[in-house]
Length: 158
Image 1 (cartoon, rainbow, N blue to C red):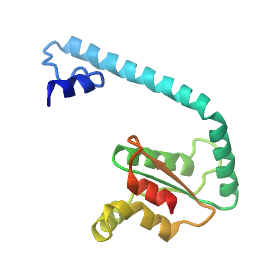
Image 2: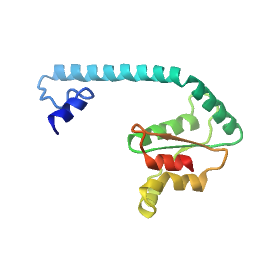
Image 3: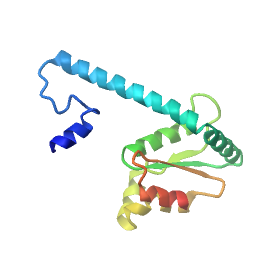
Image 4: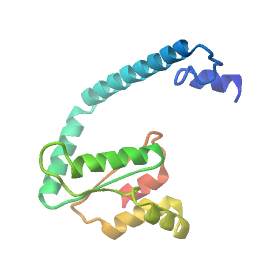
């Protein structure tokens, strides 16, 4: 890791590169890092809700209409985003309140994901599942922290 690499990511985990021997100081750094990330996350959530309010409202209406017609929700994501996709599917299929709807994470079945990755290529693991299962009234939501996952966009286009 070069000096510039450390500087560019040091704000995320300031305690990793240091040779901390003081446990209290390390715990203080960890707590401060968590508070800063939480604050930034909350700020971004509020900013996004304001900016995309009308689009989110319209998407919610369209989803409700499709669910009323028997539509199912498919979620997909790579890496850490696959856990977000699984969480989103779970929130719809096992809500804290309200009526559950049919929802599946396409990354959840390791056997299917690895078989498709091996047999047809990783870039098609989600598209092939959409082709096999989805109907015109279903919904697919792709989650990506990088925003440049071609396999996700290939599946969504399908």
